[in-house]
Length: 259
Image (cartoon, rainbow, N blue to C red):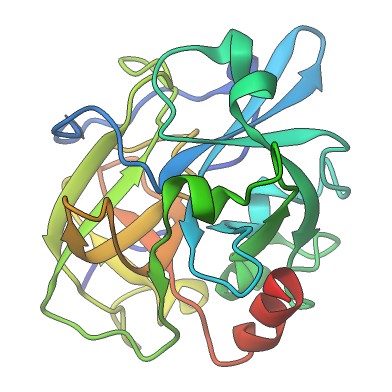
């Protein structure tokens, strides 16, 4: 049986990050960045920044980013940040995120992500979509490209790369990191109930800041994109991470973000 996975990789400020798990270190991404993957940044108050990760996904309006629902709303912060930006291809410069990024115009979380309930009860709904405003008359997809998005069921046994910007020591949130392995979907008896249906990867120490980062199959270096099958949701203290795929009911939410 796999280790029960319940400790959330929360979208928290840099001042509140927890200690890193003892696990295999996530590697730097070859080439430094991926054009269609980026960092979500907002002012969390008190001189702190809120951080998450996300990926541009192909949508009719060219302005949609897939991420985790807990990047938008938590019990402690039930409303999304008033002003936040997505910086595609982010690489070492927090100070210019407003100039380099696309402003988030709206946050779309599923009805099941009810932050008045215990986190473990709503984990199956830990996915979200962001709609970005245009910048200089262009959509983020026109400027940087996009990944294909797929809904459940997710094909198992295929190589998947999990990308994000971890911000807990020894990481500083400034460079894109990744873990890689074969896609494995958690079934009944393999995990506690909230994580059944999620994707699991072992020996990976991506930490807070990587929340919402894409799980990508069939990545193409030429197109700087692939197929997003899930987003980073939770992790354990011994190097297991779980990605949350997109159920059929997520199609309506995606249509609202991308219409």
